[in-house]
Amino acid sequence: MLELKGVVSQYEDRVVVLRDITMSAEEGKTTCVLGPNGAGKSTLVRTIMHLVKPRAGQIIFSNVRIDQLKTHRIVKMGVSVVPEGRQIFPNLTVSETLRVGAYLENDRAIIDQRLENTFEIFPIMKERLKQVSATLSGGEQGILSIARALMANPKMMLLDEPSLGLAPMITSRVFRAISEINKRGITMLLIEQNAVKSLAIASFGYILQKGEILVYGNTEKLRNSEIVKKAYLRG
View (cartoon, rainbow, N blue to C red):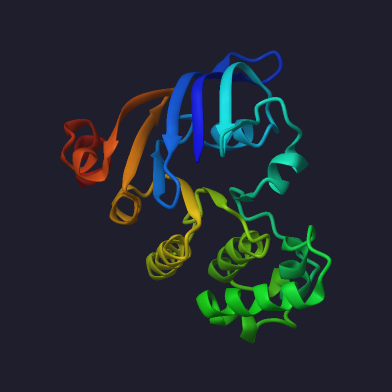
């Protein structure tokens, strides 16, 4: 569903952040990208969404080249993002935030059905509908950010470190929700530092380090990789 071919990305007046990135995310699957802080993970998401313009290479989504498209057109094609740090609107209620996620849809009946579908995965959001988003716990804000992206009825979701700053119990809940969304047919690209949880739900993965793909393969291969074991899987 998503393919990057030789993508190079950098910010203005800065060194190259992504170097010759070639990778893909298979339709209907969860693909993870693991890497430490500073590896270029968030830049990868921003480049796919054309918030950072790639300097070279191609990005293809559903057989259409998107690296020259504006962000709003990529969203209309069916790509939703769960940004790093959640980036919710603190003064909006949960209900208002969820409806913002469906801003491309004008049919109220369709929006209401999406809400019901979202509540099946995140029942806590139904309990919090009238609550102001800023008053939610950190874990609930993380869940709200994912639920907001789901309200766009995406073909694919890009999740930028959804477990960042969450307690272990909440992290487990978030990863279960990601797995449940994927089971409903939505392709997932999971950008994370939590290798154990990510490799448990993904079918394929990439290790990103200093802007380059260090190793890649199915999750069984990655779990058995000495590089992955030393960097992520050993205490």
